[in-house]
Every structure is written in structure tokens, then in C-alpha cells.
Length: 331
Image (cartoon, rainbow, N blue to C red; front, side, top):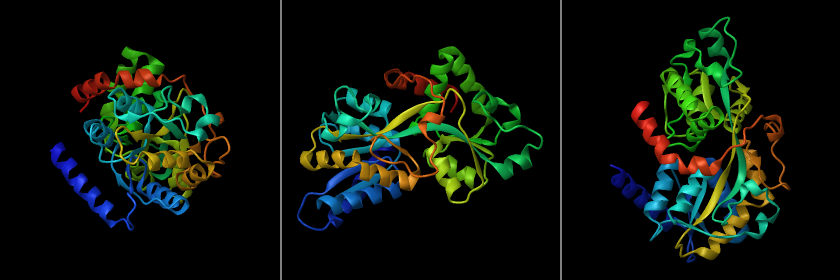
């Protein structure tokens, strides 16, 4: 089934390439970020550089697996989006190209990989979204959760939505948060206690904010910026930034053996620029990594969130072990 899906995606991707105008080789992008952001960013890049660009949007797990499988003959030039641990996984498989962008000189250390194979372009933090009306209807007199432990209230069974960590970097970050802040055994105890209360495990990180916003669930675990975006559109969402949360960076990387290296480097430089990061923030309320870029009004500053010291290498090294256990014991 996976081979069939990859084949279909390749066919669609090829049609997109043929649709590009002009004789110049288009920059090919595997996009984990949302379609709206990918479209706006590629259009601005083409406008500024004259280089045509096209993208294929899919989930984190699917595209990272694809990048690794295609490492000897990549069908794209850029991997855009996904938490750092996923890029570490692709790097360990030898699928990423090293590139030290001159724009990265002023970026925080946590946003640049030691071997320059990936670079962060925005900061992501986890939180809880609450549909105020549904929560009040379902749980009259019950206090809204303020901590991760509060989600374990058995009354919430079936009213929580979170993504599947096998497919989504959002949820894998949540799983690793519990394992790192509580320790391995207590972390798994927490996860296995929470899982029966989850009513749905969609694949895409964009699903929980939407399902919370439309009132299909009372509670959702998601990135705070995604929840903020839906709230800004008028949806009835209360934001909670629990203490001992986690932050990571959404990353960009050039794929090893790309035949379009010069254009790929220009796209990395573009994504690290203040202009691109401010555009990204204006669309989805993410926090820019570039200190010269200003986040959009309404986003939650990193300084206001209590974060643990997150070990991205441990998260990457443990991925297979953690997801195998999750698949066996939860799904």
C-alpha cells in the first residue's frame, strides 16, 4: 500500500513539474508545512529570484520516509518543515546535504544542526486547546485543565483529540515530552493512561485545532500557534500553555544528491530571511527563529512559556523504539 501511495504521489508531483512555465529546472519541495504556507512561500521565492518552485504536501512521517527511501535518487530538492528529530533521522540515513547558509550566522544555536544539514526557521511549542462551549456543556462545574496531568481526568474520555505520533511530528513531540519530563517508566505510564481518553488519532497536525475549533471535541493537544490561528479566525478556543512544555524548531534541509543544488541553497537562504519568516508568522502565528524577524501580533512569546530542557538527539535516537511500542500497546 505504501508503494502504491508513493507511486501516486510521484505521478502527481511530476504533473506539477510539467505545469511550471519556462525552461528553467523547477525547485522541487517536499512540504510538511500547511498548503497555505507552502503556496505563499514558494510564490514569494519565485517572485524574488525568478526560480520556479513546486511542492508536494504530505504528513511528516510519510515525507521523511520518502526522503530516506529516495536518498540515492531524490525526487525532490528540499524538505520543508518537520521537527528537528525527523531531520536528524534523515541525516543519520545519509539523505541530507550539508549547507551552512550565511543567513544562519545570527540564528540561535539550537536552530542550526552541528553538521549544517538542517536549519530551523520557526519555533513551535505544544499546548492544549479547549472548545469553551463544548467543555462547559460536557463538563459543568469541572475546572478546565491547566497541566498535562489534568488531562488524565477520566471524565474527559472520548473528548480529547491528538494526532498519531507514527505519522505526525506534533504528536511524537508530545510523546517525547512525557518521556523526558517524567522519565521512561512514568512517561509510558502517563501515555498509556491518557490514550483511552483520546477519541481520535488523525494523521495530520492540523486536524486537532480544526476539530476543536468546530466543536467536535472539547480538548485537543496541538501546537499553540495552530490553535492561535483558529482562535484569530473567530473560533471558540481557549489556549492553555501547561508548565513543563516543550519547544522545537520547524526545519528546512537540502536533499542529498539533488541535481538542483544552487537553487536549493537559495531557497534555504530565503526561508531563513526575516521576510520569509514574517510571512510565515503572518499566516500561521509561528515564532520566527531569525531575531530580525517580527512575529505577528497575537502569537504567544516563547518567554511566556515554561519549557523543559528537551533532548532532540534522544528523541531522534529513540524514535523506532518509541513508535514500535506505541503501535503495539496503543494502536
